[in-house]
Length: 618
Image (cartoon, rainbow, N blue to C red; front, side, top):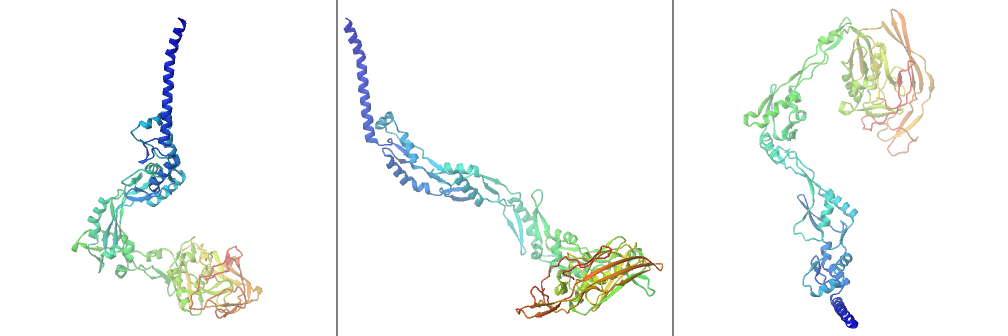
């Protein structure tokens, strides 16, 4: 009875085991069959529509390269704002990794159950491609794309051109959001897009839009250019055309973004179409001028006069309202204003100028450049009023010696040699003023003699100036106002200081020449060379004695050092020069470059006042 139970038991146990073995054998057979039939990749596997089912890995790689290669290399159309551009995948560092994609496709079908199931499967399975992106390359490419496609915001505007108003359309500002653009391009790669891929941007709307631009055109710009305006100025009339008006007219946005007219009244006042008429009705003021009467006392020789002018503000106030009118209403009147002189007759009398304090005259050879330059400097100096304690400066009063300031090329000294440069000859004015101040007894502040001595000037009592490096300055310490009276001819100039004398007399003394140095010889060439006669160098001391009540109350000395004046001969252009390094000059009437001044002092007064400078001397 025990064996029967055991068999039964054993039989019951054995039957399932046998069945399981049969199942295993069956599945194994099917798995082998599926592998033999299906290859490395499960049937129905697709990558972006490319069917890889049943292919080996090598076959799948070839299929992907053949089917997706052109699309992987094709430019990506992108939209940035309103612009459509193309982005190169290679430049973006984007590519299809076919090996990794095949691995992904093969792994997704791995295992007996999946393989066996593929024998009976009738569906398909899509596998996403493996895409690689070089982040650094992508960001650099997107940066370049952002720079090339950036659109700066442009406000709507009005332009005036040759008498016509033109509207400038507003544009929004568009900037690529580069951080987000990288991800958008990666996601769009190898994805079919009928339309360009829209990349993220930031937009900046213009402050002046199309509506405001249109309003400004209708309400102001077009009426402004509809015809000329007519202006009455005193007893003159003039018509200003739209072309002239438009040349000085703009429209600017105010704080609220509204376009408002902006007329350049200063430019319009100076325009050749306007200036002649304005000049006809304008008159400069003339200062009152003290002079000497028959008894030697100061009188008001010229009472002066009030001037008249048209200001740019008055012109603007007259023109702007006319621009939006039509027909005869485009006519108006410009007011003139009175211009008071700097010194009226009453003011001149109140100054208390009683007598001639000092006067000095310098004579010079006639030359056209001297007549022009000396005359211009005298014009700028004449009429100066120096109040008590005030400093007078040659350079501040006369200004830079340039053609724009009324000066022409003339002869001056540069590094010990005569050369030609704008303003040459005004040292005669500086010398005359220096002596007038010397004999007026006022306090010297800055003074420089010529580098070498010029015979027509008093030794040690002459002056030169150089713009930016050497000035002639003195302070009026007389206790009373001083009036500068200056005049010139073709061969002489005189400067007198009118005021109230502080001392009865100023006496000048001069010592002998010392430290005498013989001149050398130099040769120059070209059209800038200036012949120069030789003269020895020397030192000299000049004294100034102040006399009050018949007694000497004060004395001061000024020591000046003069370098030798070398003999200079000129050779033709291109000929060898006798001595290297000779400084070229110019012949009268030629045009030369402005020489650069040096800063070497050549003399010092006993009281410490600077008294000379080598280099360029006007």
